[in-house]
Image 1 (cartoon, one colour):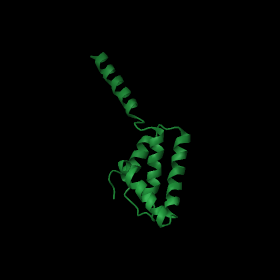
Image 2: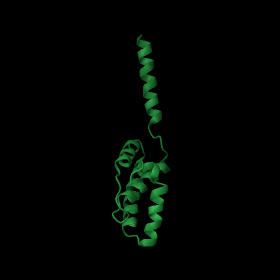
Image 3: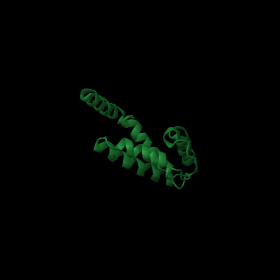
Image 4: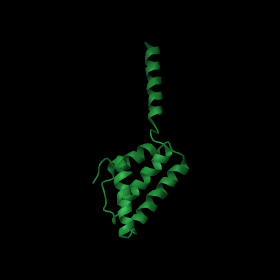
Length: 108
């Protein structure tokens, strides 16, 4: 019985490790950019709760360089969106609607 319990715990911990980092670093950075676009006043702020949860959950096991880059992407995207003129604003809104839809969980 002890062997079965130990084996079950070992398999569960391996499954947890396999699920950690379920998106690539590139997808993580793309989600970070989406977070910046979603928080822009100029584009119209969106509810970012699901995106924040994703970044929090996925960020823990990332390299420091990736996490630092993600913070930079959030800030840069928000600043870019806040300063965008009408033409650029339309382009950023289209990006947010297409590339970011999966990360935002349908927030409008």
